Length: 142
Image (tube, rainbow, N blue to C red; front, top):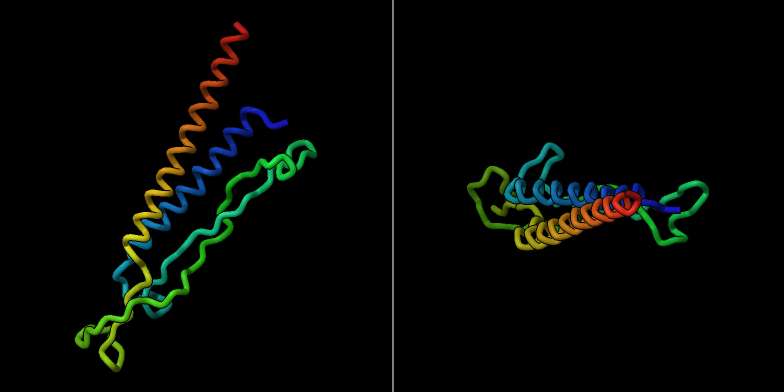
């Protein structure tokens, strides 16, 4: 049986996943003009990959009940090519004078940030609701 602490754990897992997503987006925006990395070449946009992790309590399989934790499985590099800009005086320009800038689209990142922020707010709201329900249950017992 899933109880109040499981509900809190599920919501907290969502908050953790969305925080990772927001941090990744912030990193993408901060490196939007980075043309040279330690690995060589321009910065590659990062994208967290989420997975549902079933809750297993006392032999119960959460997936059978449709209950799962949000988990960041990995963070992958976006393989889309960067933007080529003609800047022959740039130190990272190729033989034709073009510089490859990161494959980071600021508008796309801001939309992703808003989505992650809204999901985070929803997680906070669900935790607040669970807390109010627990308080109400305790008040009934008085």
